[in-house]
Image 1: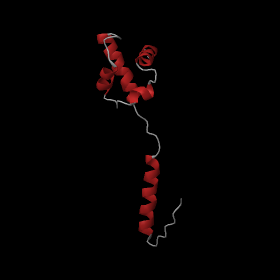
Image 2: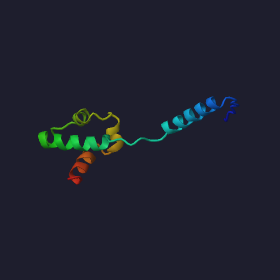
Image 3: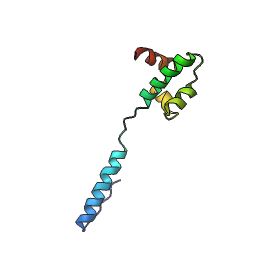
Image 4: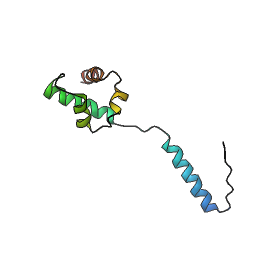
Length: 89
């Protein structure tokens, strides 16, 4: 479905074009550092409490990352996160 807008005022036209550009920019994925923060938090927690003493909820809380991002970045869960920690020395 397309729409046609007839704009007579040039100032209004510039405003509409700017809004359209901003809306299209919002659809693009944003770079997030939550993955790096989770790896750093897991590294600190694994050192302090060990692998079995660290819960994934602790990693999420320590990293201040969105809860859903853990399984987005690490679909394999705690094991995959620990592997990344070990690989990034």
